[in-house]
Structure formats: structure tokens, C-alpha cells
Image (tube, rainbow, N blue to C red):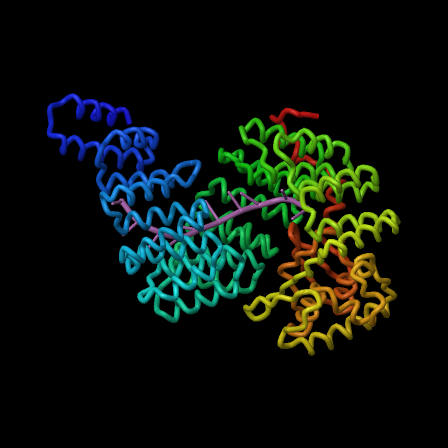
Amino acid sequence: MRVLRQIHARLLTHAMPISSISFGLCKIIGFCALSPYGDIDYARKLFSQIQRPNIFSWNSMIRGCSQSQTPSKEPVILFRKMVRRGYPNPNTFTMAFVLKACSIVSALEEGQQVHANVLKSGFGSSPFVETALVNFYAKCEDIVLASKVFDEITDRNLVAWSTMISGYARIGLVNEALGLFRDMQKAGVVPDEVTMVSVISACAASGALDTGKWVHAYINKQLIETDLELSTALVNMYAKCGCIERAKEVFDAMPVKDTKAWSSMIVGLAINGLAEDALEEFFRMEEAKVKPNHVTFIGVLSACAHSGLVSEGRRYWSSMLEFGIVPSMELYGCMVDLLCRASLVEDACTLVETMPISPNPVIWRTLLVGCKKSKNLDKSEVVAQRLLELEPHNAENYILLSNLYASMSQWEKMSQVRKKMKGMGIKAVPGCSSIEVDGLVHEFVMGDWSHPEAMEVREILRDISKRVHAVGHQPGISDVLHNVVDEEKENALCEHSERLAIAYGLLKTKTPMAIRIVKNLRVCGDCHEVTKIISAEYRREIIVRDRVRFHKFVNGSCSYCSRASQLVLLPFKLHKRVLKDCHAID
DNA sequence: TTAGGGTTAG
């Protein structure tokens, strides 16, 4: 930059034709805006000083601004200014850059105006502009429009296919992403490592382990390079699918590991209940001199939370501040959860009260679950009030409060909450679980019998029902609140989406195959009694992945929960080593 | 000077 500034000064002092000076300045603007060694502010200053910037300068500025650390709608404003001035005319480069800028900040309205401009200017047939449009709509989560633009592309190249697959994968439409991957192969387009990152991410999002394993084998067979991004996606996929051993294998084989790779491994170990291993990996990350970021600490703190390591968690928090990481909402969430799980609800409340950012509903819900656990009714009601002020129309909040009153035998108050919910016309969102069978992810929604094999599933559920009642299981509070105990006993079991998915697993797979419920959106709670019974009765391992962890039911018990309770009693040699340089805040 | 990719609290 110093040299460029000198050249700039010389341009201005030498007697040269205006056109030459302008050309030179445009070159400098391009460098300053786009090079990692450039300076976007300097580019802005120069850009504002020249009267008729050329197309190269406009494009450089639009692209440069979209790449800044704090993305904004500035590229769109520049584009509009360019169109208004009428010189120079935008070209395909301009359109691709401004659409990319819109996708980064999810500016749907502005991007649609650019789309109209693309159609008017006749740039719609440029493969770069077409793909930029698909990417823009996909990033704005308007997958229907993304798919429409994609369908209209006559000659789809590798990037166009990859963009559309990535669009489906990002919003968790795994079957669509994988279906398109098959179509791409049928069309004779050879995928590369970028395509495979999206395919693997789709498997991770849906927990489709068998498909993920198949795709990994395909990558090896096709000799597709497993670079840093693809390896990280594989680590993440195996961890999210509960196959932590394979995640570790891929991770250990990586020649270069950056912050995202380490974070992926640490978070993966934490969600699989392997807190000690997560903290050991963090220690190794520090040894490898890779700087952690806020995601790394989300993994570290959630590992501490799930295994009751309170003082260690506090020290990691201090260490995080020393790294210069400003605590995000997610990190406060981890810390509140850590304190609540350790029954330190007062400390959790103090932390929430002193947060420099306004707590979001997730924080209040975490706190409310903590209050429920410690049976603190007064505190619960204060927290619930704050939660309902913030989110008065979310059914989950009313169900949580209703469950809380039920757990404290406050039946009258429980009834009032449910009446209020009904009076406001708020309906509970039905539970939803999915299971992967033969490479397809089947989704079951509570009370929904539209699956083509629903009758067969019902038969299995009848059998489950008989066996569960034969061992003397009493309906839990969840069954009571779903108001299903008065109906036929078998229906009481049928209503839960998790059981529909388990029944489908029993129907479609043979012993000794484990049944993997790959997505279960129930709010994380205690192990489900019925699932324990099914695992014992049918002699099947049942793996239920909820939002935060894997429950592995074997012979009537959940290995995750028993491990988590054992961990609290373990001596923490590793942690002392990890924490030797940290300053305690407690 | 153009388009596609990896980690995120309950």
C-alpha cells in the first residue's frame, strides 16, 4: 500500500494527460479494493475523487465492498448509482458481483431488482449470472425461485449443479440435495470437492449416516481431493451422525487443521457426550498454536456443561476473554446452561441480569428449565414472565411453563396456562422425527398417518403398545399433557413422532441392526422411558439424536446419560493440565 | 475483474 500511495502521489504531480491519470487511478482502485494487501477505505477515497470511473473501477468497488469484514448493502447502492449515471453500462461481471453481495447480506428485495435488470439487459444467458442468481435465491432461502432459475438454465455446468445442491443442503432438504446429486451424475457432470462438501453437509444436517458413508466411499473411489473444507465437512458429518470414531479418524488424518477443523472436532466430541476428549482436543489445539474462536468455546463450554465441570467452565470463560473473544449470545447460552445443570440457578440469573446484550428467548428458556429442575417457583414465574413478554405466541414456552407447574404439583396454575394458550389460539407444533432407511430419510410428524406404509407402522405400534403395558409402564407427564391417556392405550403410544419413527425402523430393518432416529425435535429432556423399554424388549440399539446430543439406548438404559452422570465423579487430570495458565474468575 | 464449499448455545 505504501508503494501504491507513492505512485498515486506521482500521478498527481506529473504533467500527464487526464486520461492517463484516470486510467492509472482506476488500476489503483482495483488493487486497493480487491487485493488482500489493499485498503478498501483508500479505494473509496480515490473512487470518490475521479469523475468518470471506468467499468473496471465500478466492478472492483462493488466486489471489494461485498468482501469487507462487515458486509452491508453498499454494493447495491453503488450499483444503483452506476445505473442512474448511465455510464458506464453494467456488464456480466457487475451483475455477478452485485448478486453475490445481495446473497451475502440476504437482501432479497434488492437482489430481485437486480434480477429484473439482468432480464432487461439481456445478461440472463451468461452462465456466471445464471449461477449467481441461483446462489442468491438459495442464500435468501427462497429455494423455489432458486430451483426455477436453475431449471431454466439450458447448459448446466459443474458450478450451477453444485450451487443448487448447496442450496438444498443448507436448508436441510437432504433428499432433494442427494436426488440432484444423482441427476448431476446422470447428466455426465463430474463432481469436485466443492460439490461433495454440500452433499456431505446435507447428510450431516439430516443425520443420514449410511448415505454419508456411501458418499465418503464415493469420494475416495473417484479420487476427489479431500481438502481442508471437505475433511472438515466429513468430521462434522460423522460427529453429527453419532459415529465419533470415524470423525476422529478423518480428523487425525488431516495434514493441516485450521480453527474450523478443530472446532468441528471439539463440538463433535461434546455433542457425543465425550467431554474429556473434547477438552483434551482443545489442549492439543492450543499446543498446535491454532487460535480458537467463539465456536471452539461453544464446544468447550457445552462439554463442561454436559459433564458438570462448573469451575473448569468458569475458567475456560476467563481464558476465552483473554483470547479477545467477545461473548456472543450462544456463549452466554452455554454458560447459563452450565450453571443451571449444576443447580446454580442464582448464579445463572445473576449472569443473565449482567449480560451486556439483551437475553434472547433461548437464554430465558434455559433459565426456566434450570428453575424447574431446582423447583424454584418464585424465580420460575419471574423468568416465565420475561420469556412470554418476548415471545407471547410460541407454544413451546407455554408447554414448558405448563410442564413446570405440573412438576411442582401446581395443577391450578398448570390449567390456567393451558387455558391461556387455548384462549390465544396457540397450538403446539407437532413433534417431528426422522429415520434413514435404504438411503432415504423418512419424516414422521406427530399424529400424521400420511406415510405410504402407515398401516404396517400401526401394526408394529400395536405390538409395542402390548409389550410396553405388559412391563407395567405408567403414562408419563408428557402423555398426560398431550391428552391422550383417555384414548385407547395403543393410540397413546402412537401419537409420538419418535415412536412412529422407531416403529418404522423395526418394520424395515432386521436385528441386530441399530435403529437410528436421526432427528428428533423434542426439547432435550430425560431419557424416554418407553424408548428404554423398546430397546430392551426388541433387543435393539436405538440411537435418538435430539438437538444437542445422542442418546444411545441399549438393553433398557441410555449410555449417554449414565456416562454423563459418571463423568462428574471422575478425577480431572486433563483439565488441570489444560487450565494451568488460566486465571480463575471464581 | 466474473458464479459453487467446512465449525455455532437450549
